Image (cartoon, rainbow, N blue to C red):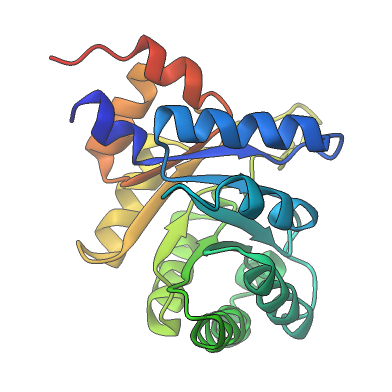
Length: 238
């Protein structure tokens, strides 16, 4: 893939709680300059981003039930619908992680389905195609749980499965932090599970050209990162 194609795989991301309007505006300006796929911002900034990007083909992406996924399904569905009304074209929802750990996949599927259905309905109302991505938070899940959750997302009609929020802090029994974010292993597993026709988004800790190349080779077709500018400027076409 060349630099232009890679840029169109990147969701240029700023989800820090202390992000300011000026930083969101700059994020949007960078996204237009480098022709990224989208900017990914918290729901409070969707209107700002939509206004900044109105004359470009860069999409507005936002996060739902973020970062814990512990909101009710009804709250997630409402949040997604409102974000779409505010100008979002893509919504990245966090699953009910506890339900997945319990093996309550019916609840996981229902949670995803309610967001998908609300997003589709609101998208039709505003005349905009909506993409729904499902954040698994893979650092908390076993391979079997990842596979089952991916199948829930596929059955619910979501467009992508996604690795991580980037905000998880898993710890071992010794209290030490464990790895989080995107991994080659998890992306390969997710791609194998959902097949070739569903999207796989890698996110969390992606900061280098080499990592982007490895993740795309593993099966990712969207990259969520706050280091998009650095990655594109460092990218050298073969």
